[in-house]
Image (tube, rainbow, N blue to C red; front, side, top):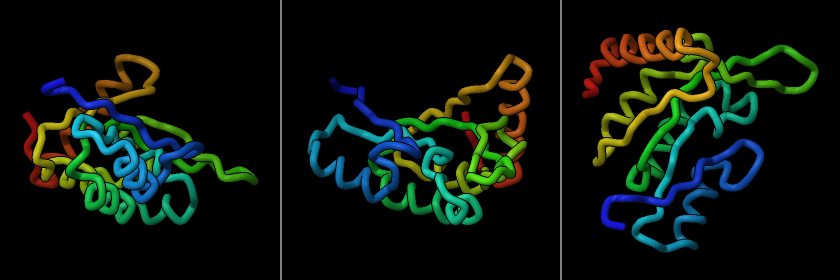
Length: 144
């Protein structure tokens, strides 16, 4: 393909699950059209990563940026239970550092789409979109 990439999404429960494990996969596949679909919420799979998600986001873009072809948008909230339980929520209702996410995304050499996912209805998609647009404006990021 001339303009298409095959990508795999990092998941918190399977490989690749970190930027480093994704780099190993990229090197093993060794194909120009193999890329990264980044969902930073899926990389936040521990309390340490949850509280330091700004650094996790920056690490993802620093290590994987040249291969990122597309991204997902949602947010994470920590549900207090005995075991760690992160819930996917509408952007703005969780703790993900969206200003950092959007700034890093805007630096990519390609126009990678940012796609909302896993929301319940049109109202939640509208809310998530409005939040992302507001944070982008506050962070000085322009998206077409």
